[in-house]
Image (tube, rainbow, N blue to C red):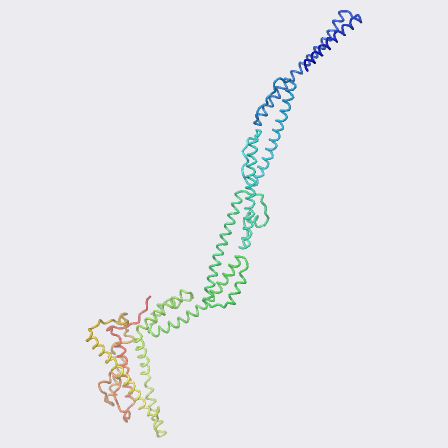
Length: 531
C-alpha cells in the first residue's frame, strides 16, 4: 500500500513539475524568474519536509514517553511490561502504547480507589474495635494479591465486629437483669451507660468488653453471695421455725414475699430471722429461767452455800443464748448426777433438818397436853384420836415406828449373814467401792458431825431429856438403837416429857443410821461440781 502510494506521489509530483514547466514555457517566464519560483516550490517542500520531520520527532518523543509511563505503571501494578509488535509504524506504536497506557492507568486508578475504600472500612473498624490500621505502603499501588489480603483482613474484622456486638449486647442484657435483680444503683460511667438500656455498640473495643465482663462478673459474684446468704438465712429460718414450732400458715406468708428482687428477698429473710431470733431469745429466757428454777431446787437439795452458787457465773448472766442454755443444762445434769450418787446422805440430812425443826417445835406438845387435860376435866371424858386416848395414840405410833425399824434392821442382818455364808462357800470376793466412796465426799462439821459435840445445846437438850426420861421410864439397852422401849399402851403414869426424851433418842438413832450409810471416816462436804 505504501509503495503504491509512493509511486503515485512520485508520479503526481513529476506530473506537477512537468505541468509547471509547461506553464512557464507557455507564459514565457524568464529563466531567473523560473528559478525563483522553483525555489518557492522547493522551499515549500522543505517546509513540508521539516514539518513532517518535526512530527516524526514529536512522535518518537511521545513513543518514548508512553513507553516510560507504561513501564512505570507495569512496575507499580506488578504486571508484565508491554511487548511491542515488530514491523509496525511509529504512529501505530504510539497508538498501541497510548491504548495500553490508558488500560494501565485505569487499573491503577481502580486499585487506588479500591484501596481507599478498603482503608476507609479499616479506619471504621479501627475506631469501633480499637485496632491498629492495616499495614500497607500508602505510597505505592497495591497489587491484586495485596488487595485480596486486605479484603480478607477486613472480612475477619467484620466477623470480629459481629461477634463482639453479639457479646456486648448479651453482656449488657445480663448486666441489666442482674442490676434489676439486685436493685443495683449504677455508679461509674460504664454502669450508667449500661443502665440506660440502649444497645449502642459504637465502641466494641476489647477494653470495654473486658470492663463489661468485669462488671458482669462482679454482679454475678454479688448475686451468688446474696443467694448463699439467702440460702443460709432460709436454712436458719427453717431451723428457727422448727425450734419455735411456727405454724404452717405463718410460714406460707413468707413465701408470698419471696417474689421480689434478690436484694429484697434477702432483706425479707433477714427481717424474718431477726424476728425469730428475738422470739427465740424470749423463749430462751423462759426456758433458761425454768432451768434456773430446777437448778436452784437442786442447790437446795445438795445444800449449796451462797459462795458455791455464785461460782456458777452463767446463772447470773442476762445474755440469753443457746450457749447459756447449754451451760445451764450441763450444770443441771451434773448436779442431778451428784445428787443421785449421794441421795441417801442428802435425804438423811434433809430428814434430820425436818426432824430437828419438829424437835424444836415440840414445846407445842406441852401446850397441846394442857389443852387436852383441860378439855377432859371440862367434859369429864377422855379426848380420843382414832378411838384412842391421845397419849396412847402417840405411844402406839412410836411403837409401830420402832417395830418397822427393828424389822428393817433384822432384814439387813439376815442379808449380811447370807452374804457371809456365800462368801465362805464360794470364796471371798473383792469388795467394790460404792459411788459415794469413790467420790470421796464428806459432810462438813457445820452441817453434820459423826458424833455430837459434848457442849452443844442440842446435846444438852438430849442429855436433859434422857435424865428426865430415866426418872420416869425404865428403858432397855435397845433404846439408843431403836428409839423407844416396849411400854404398855395403858401405862397410866406416862408423862409428856417422856415423848420429848423418846423423840431425842429417835433423832439420835436416825442420824446415826444415816451417818453409817457413808463408810468414809472423814467429813463430807458439798463441793462445786466441775465439768
